[in-house]
Length: 117
Image 1 (tube, one colour):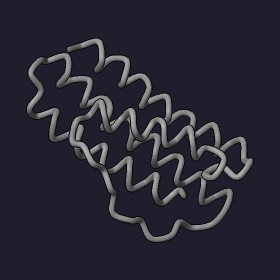
Image 2 (cartoon, one colour):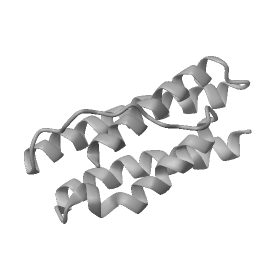
Image 3 (cartoon, rainbow, N blue to C red):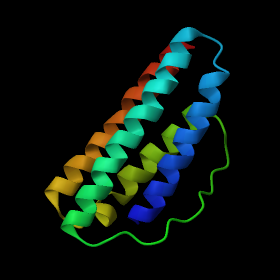
């Protein structure tokens, strides 16, 4: 399950970066940059903590996203994280906290992107 999360976040990060270059306003440009930097930082801490609590991660699958719209992707992944929270954390509260930090990056960026248009 953690491997699916990694694939999703990296895909979301890439789409955010591509759209960052095409942003119609400076505010959207800066928010997308903040997202792709903060998401990877939070994911890195989560994966390292996960491996400390459990075991090394497995192979990371190719993402299967249907949209290249950053808001759609962030909503989709945010919902996926919520739906799969326990499957990722396996009852470990520290891993849950790190996952919640990543989820917070998504929700904060969603709020900003929805209101910057």
